[in-house]
Amino acid sequence: MENRQTAETVPGWDGDPRGWRRYQREVSWFVMGTKPSMRKYLAPRLIAKLTGSARLLAMGWSQQDFQGVDAVNQYLKKLSKSPLVRRKLPNTAAVMQQ
Image 1 (cartoon, helix red, strand yellow):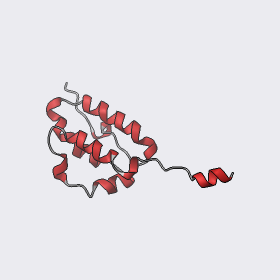
Image 2: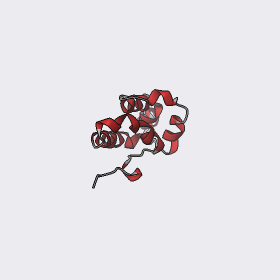
Image 3: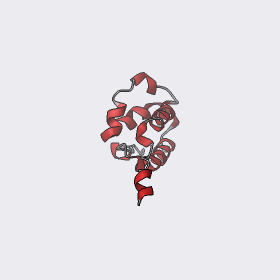
Image 4: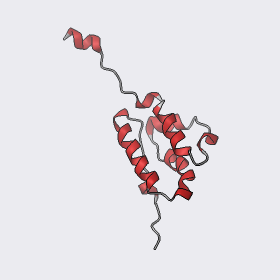
């Protein structure tokens, strides 16, 4: 019997910067666990599993940006350049006053 991927195996992310590194690892494992001939179809599946602010961001992207063999890499690069993955800096003025 062939092992088929289900929607539950597709990693998801809600846009929280604290989960970004975990999400990158999960996407990497997900891609490696997919047949090479099917990898060009993974970016839309990954985008569909986004929630929260990550989903709002992705809904403004063009679908043509995520076609082809390198689509997952393009997807991860686009997410990594977004403000979602940047951690908020602590308020240094408040810290210095304490």
